[in-house]
Image: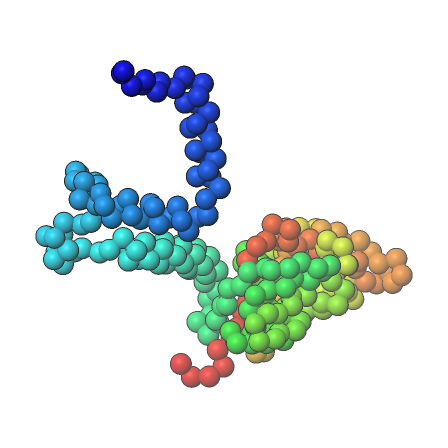
Length: 270
């Protein structure tokens, strides 16, 4: 009598394969990983046949080449190179900015320290340079080549800049009168808004709007006059008719500043 051949139906085969898949899914990972490694170990010879070997393992002649670098070493070098490239670009930008300021500074004894504005407060900037970089209280601060304030307080690595628009910032200034080729001296203080005012200037001086206002030289801090802004208003002081009431508009919009330069005079020998 001939044996009966077992021929499962398609439904039975499908259900069996699904159950087998669930069984493999529930088997712990440590057991399935052993099966995987066992399969790789048994069929290693066949798996290594083909062009994939050259992809995973460098050729022997390339290993002996003086120019061969392993992939992980190449990645490390690439990361270091890109970081260095970014630093060089940043240094280049700072050198260009420093060059612009240096071109307007005739005195070789003047040093400049570039700094970034890291915080803004009312009538005040916080910059990322301090006494470790040569900064000290009272030094003049430039924004786009114009005096915008002075160092109010310097710590080791940060400093606060009191802006010329603050009433706490009082500077000696010179008002240029181009027709007479003279300067009128005065003292400027901020109006705690967006400008400043020059105090106690006698009315006998012929001062007009749009005259330039410069920071006056100050021993140990500023060797030559530096532009601050222009006269925006010049009217008779109502409280004292013999004096001018002079308003000053800063030369630069402080809101657009991201970097500043601090004037640091060289006091010792080179």
